Image (tube, rainbow, N blue to C red):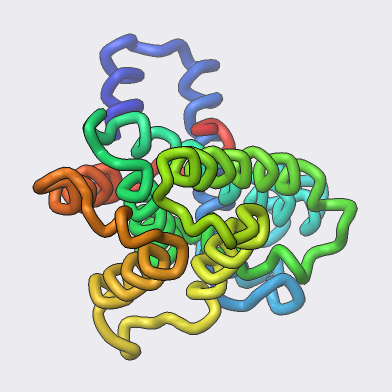
Amino acid sequence: MARKKAAEKADPTPDSKADSKSARTRERILDAAAHVLSVKGYAGTRLTDVAEYAALQAPAIYYYFASREDLIEEVMWVGSANMRTQIQTMLDALPSDLTPMDRILAAVEHHLRYELQISDYTTAAIRNAGQVPEQIRSRQLEEESKYGAIWRELIQAAADAGQVRSELDKHAARMFVVGALNWAAEWWTPRWGSLDTVVETAKSMVRHGLGTTDSELSVPGASTRTATASRRAGTRRAVTTAESV
């Protein structure tokens, strides 16, 4: 909406108006593909379903994407890239006096809320990572590596502060935590219960699974501020298009 108002104010030329319409159509196709892919999976995603959800004729998709695989590749990349940028932005906005463990818990919460409540793109990327052919996973794998680095730094910082149990292998711990968070996309629906309850359960398991006794002692009020900052960052739906990342 803000982009549309800016274009109106600029009084664009006919060519730029056409470009803007084309960009909106492309975005609509991507949004539709993300939704269908998140629900039906790679094998079940058909361009006719995408076109129906986008309120377009199926042949129109080929004007923007050369093939079904190109469209799915774009969705998978956007989903992974947006998760990374969302988590990093949220972490950068957290109060400076939070403990390293509290920063981990903020990431746990934001990952779950973004994956399960906010972005069809990220849900599609996570649920289909093991289904799509390797040749359309290269950009997604690069984003996953960058996202893994965020978690590696979070856990290392907590370990350096003495808030991670010394007997734990930090690489294995990271893989278990992120893997469990991603798996929530496979089983959680609102009929299973409140997302708030799922988030608090996950945070408790991570804190007690990774943490030392000392890590239970966080800065007074830190947990409340962590949850508030994370939720504030997640309340606005991200612009999940290729242009947004």
